[in-house]
Length: 265
Image (cartoon, rainbow, N blue to C red; front, side):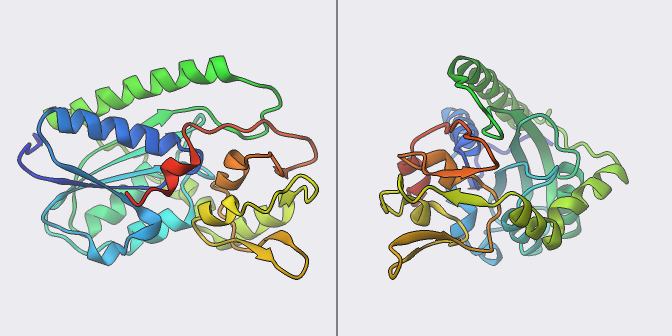
């Protein structure tokens, strides 16, 4: 289907390290260069039932556990039924997903949306990184943004596709949809705070999309709750690198500033 340039886009996004917001912002710029009005909306702040079916809907988010986080799954599952509303999707990932494009597309088709296309863009990661990779990351971001440009153009030209691997993608999506898997992750790989380093700036608390960080005023310590979805915002943006996971120190990575993620739009 060819893109209707007179129709507005509501682009819903969720981002951990900032990779997805970087890609979504780049695609917005390409759309706006063609005269399309684009409004960016935070998935964590929006009510999915209030989505405007009269607009083109964009979805952008990171891959997690071969699928995506519970926050994003819940948003997609809670979208209203729409008759023929065009939708496109872009995800950012380290290497491979397998369990998001097909299953998300099936949910959206069942709700009456028309699938314009889905793209996946590799970006830098911060999983078990032990040494600085700034140069390699900058090259990967440059390549990722080039792919974002291309994907936006394909959507507007009507050449984008929404691929699926039947059965396999449904199986792979199970892992990221199961709450028990996330509970197991929190038990095996908890996030830890170095209380001597921590300045109690509470940036982690303000950034957390699921309100999983709180300040224990009695102990004057930040406490990690039991609802973490491993978006890694707290780890990525802690100004004194006081938050870690695993047994060894890991190098932080963020695609933009914490203030960019905290903007209302």
